[in-house]
Image (cartoon, rainbow, N blue to C red; front, side, top):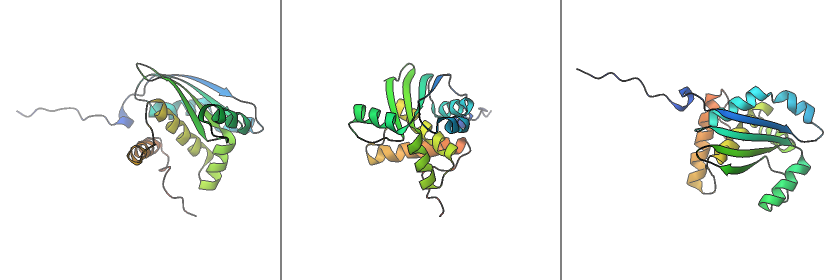
Length: 167
């Protein structure tokens, strides 16, 4: 007699992992506008879709000055970047800070023809994967990470963040 097995759940069908989220806003000119575009429940949803384990994550949205200072201090690069991930532990609990530089993300979204929320979602997914050990230093690692990001973003209802935008 054949054995009937339940179908295996895909990542997008699996229960989302618990997340303790702290959300912080730095002082910068467009903070109020960014705040309205980034409700806490969406930030939580985007991060949880990228998690494979329980997590405690702080997200801090900052201006260019703070972003540049932190990138210079911790990466020796004298410019503001879109996302910095500071990992404190990966097991049994992911503990990390994700720092997102609002002006950089806004500029990139405009340059790439993307909706601002879609680009924020992508940067939060990207940073959350870094917090879990994903990297893009080598081409094989970059390909794997991009594929995972695309899978997560599509599960969230967004387009492939690496697809060339029409224009």
